[in-house]
Amino acid sequence: MQVSDPKVIEHLRDLPIAYLLDLLTDGAEIEELLLYRVLQERGMTPEEIDHGVKARRNSRLPKPQTLWAIARWFTLLSALIVTFFNLTAMYLLFYSEHIFKAPIIFCAIGCVIFGFLIGYKLTCHIYLGGKTALHCGFPVAMGFVDLETGSEQIFEKLAMLARMSVNAMVGVNLSLFPLMFLFVMMS
Picture (cartoon, rainbow, N blue to C red):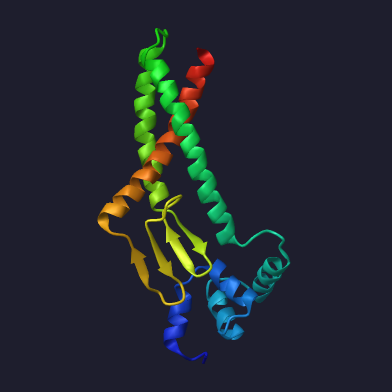
């Protein structure tokens, strides 16, 4: 691959820094000089680039995409458990004679609205979810961008709405859990 190829240079300029450092670490087919040049355009010095590559080679931690996969499954499992807790606590709240029942229900409505905002932010979150894939949406991805080809893959509308609703429910459960936990502790 030639350094002077403008298509390759433009493609590399669009890639995240973490992926470019992974390419240097893995010894990809792309010339190191080209990768160094693109990283230096982003403000990194050669010493910083070398330090980043050494840190990735010597790290005992799993790759970022592995950590993201673990985080996705942990978040989904936790959200499932918290959903059960929140539903149980809401049932207890509606059928209780607690002195703060009305203010807690009002705060719960506010938590649900705030949770949908968190869910929207989770749906827009972009991260390196695979070795060559940039994911959009956490914990359930809305779409992928293949970093090698630059092709984008999104799901059909129905599947995307289902995925967005899962992300929204994760956000709602995260925001509602502290209030429901306090209610259960006060009861």
